[in-house]
Image (cartoon, rainbow, N blue to C red):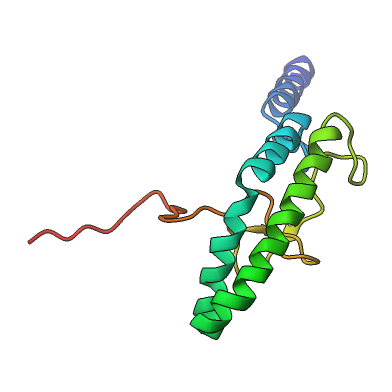
Length: 143
């Protein structure tokens, strides 16, 4: 009986170790290749900030503010993306932010889809123009 009990306990302990929930570390998705991709996308598509800011400022403050303030803010953010892009292109193999390859961005409170830098308002990757699909489903109407 004692031998059977020890065997059963050993078997259950091996099963529990084999089915343990092993997770990846928090920053494992941020690698040097992601940093290189972020750099290339910021260099190639950073200018997309100009029409994006014109539209955003126009919706928030009006068309005249969008044409003036949005244009200036878009050019500023476009050049900032270009600078970040070249900086990350030359340092993509080095972990520069707290010993990791993460960008210094945090989650933007209300909008869970965008990783946002609270200091200058830049997302990790340049914005998309046109139709943005964040959801994998759509509504259809049948008549």
